[in-house]
Image (cartoon, rainbow, N blue to C red):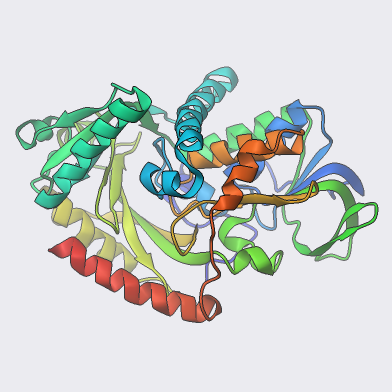
Length: 430
């Protein structure tokens, strides 16, 4: 399940994106300065930045650009990392964590700047609200605001009392909120195609349907063998396949678990109904451990995500399952149709920490975005590319983060994670 194909999954994103003229089937060059394996956001950002730096870059994607999580996620542009700043501080220290917080804000601005410079029509809309389902988690919202002011000098965030929350989210489910005016949401597949176009304009070559079978380091660089028998050589390699890195690099695959994540999109609601649900047209997620997230779309639907599976497979009658989650948050939508429902893998590490690094000066990677990758993929690309260009200090600091192998491999690891998630689901209910 969830393996690559010659076309895109049946998502609302694919249905509302002008199809690319054809698959980029041009054979890759025999030799390049850099080969990037994986055509999601991290790989494309690396291709763009390295091509702008004058490197000969070939990006190889086994399926279609953005086929994985980059092209089918919730589309929420929110600063930060999945693990949170506190856990990152414990792993890499306060000074570098402060640097990463600034880098996170910088990455968000770089995304906005690229959209403006390239005139990418990706339905960008401003504002994000984090909400608390449980009264005991309202304190976490206040703590996040206090941390931002105390540690980063960030005064943008605003606490939303329950009495005023209806001006942001028309739902009885939530107790309070945190508003970030600089965060945003967009159509990720349209934006990804804009990034791909920018990378090509800078000189990178992008190759779809180009599966890497194996690679090894040799005296003259890195050699790759493709599924069709072709071979190529490069000076540096970037592994950017995320949850689908498995056969390409088993050592990295052992440190991530492919977790199924799911989204449903309602039938059209109309503009007036959408503005009653989310008056400011902001994106929203809650602060449950197993969170839910939602936003309205440019054609006036509600896009809602949050289910996950660890043992493989799609939930039975996925559209009905997503409708139940939607109605729990918005009882006024009882009976609404769900026109689209889909799922796919995200790359989750055991401790929800980023797994970014390098082996010597030839092989680089970033994975473990844990379902929060829209901004962090740009952070990771910034660090990896500056390391590839001779400044590895910030990337190397992430070597202090230990991302252990999942015990017993993917099958046993998935079972243990499923048991753990059952415990957290119980905690989310009480």
